[in-house]
Image (spheres, rainbow, N blue to C red):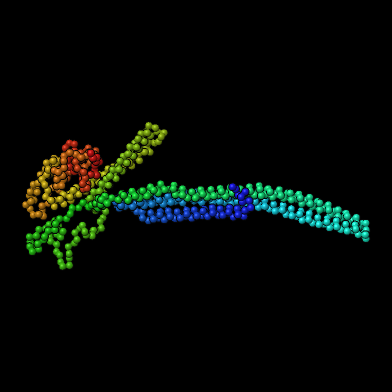
Length: 547
């Protein structure tokens, strides 16, 4: 079924219907354009939201970035930002493949529709023009017939009139004959015009207009097909980004599952563990016997010169240091302004950074030497003397970095000893140190024996002096007695360590060691050397492999 056959007389209906179709196409283009603006505004707001809540400081400088909660939140923000990017892709796809293409196609359809209806109107005007000519010839034929009949009647009346002259009769007969001839010619003309009009009318209704209507039908069907494809693009633009959006949502889920409360607690310890020893008990100061008072180092209210602190009614003892307001500290190069544990970590970071820089300079020096050798063997490639300034600069940097490495190693060793001393002081105040174990390293046995004698002597002294001469690594000695002798892993020394404190052991860079006990969170690992001897070394100095 086609429009040319079934709707041959519905020219105005087809004109309204095709105009409605083009209006619908334009409405859909406008809808998609506004939808695109909504997507773009949504993506822009999401990106602004992410920018508002994204941490301003880089992760390396932000201690909060070490917590899994913060890391997960940053990951969620990144996923939301990626989600916003997918919304922008949807908007771009709709704008290019729907708005632009359908708008261009709509203009083409309008031009085609205009051409078809102009052709139809021209055909209709030609048919109307032919019909007017037919009507004119018909009226002329009718008028000539009446004139001929009237002339014939006049001639017949004069012929019967006895008073009429012969000349009048002849004239009337000639007039009647002329009128009859004119009527005959009008008849022939009318018949020809009628035949021509019927032929044109048949062509108009059975050929010309059906072809125009069929072209309009084809145009409208193509428009509807393109509009349906435009409808499909609306969903395809969404389907294209669904996998990536699903990954974004999955990433948010992974970020939520990555929150580790226990690990965050451990991170807080690592970030803010001071390494200071807990303050000792405050001694009783008997003011009723002022001459017998003995100054105590553990008394926070006694000055270092031994004189008792005078307190009047208006003065009170200051708060103990862990809970008091801290004074503004001056930043020093060796980080001595930090608590011992934090100082050790910062020095370790600086040492590792200097070692990396030193290795980089050494590699650069080797590369420059090779390049110089190539230039000497092949002068056309370059002048060897041009590399001397760079080689000299590299050597100076190497010497400078070596000095800095030595400086930080010395500071780090001092900080390590400080941490161990604070730990030993804390243990000495609250636990009685056991006798040194038989498995202690040979180089520390003499110190351990002296420590035992000091313990015996100190047991006879007042309690305030008991923990001062005791060995500071009593916890290590207990571990030697409780742990089995078989190693639990293997480790390699990354840096040289001089174990000068009791309970520690020396090791050379690159030395293979047996792992006897893992780090318990205090930064120390117990190892055994191949040539004999066990002790503790810094965990950060080792590369550990468990069995």
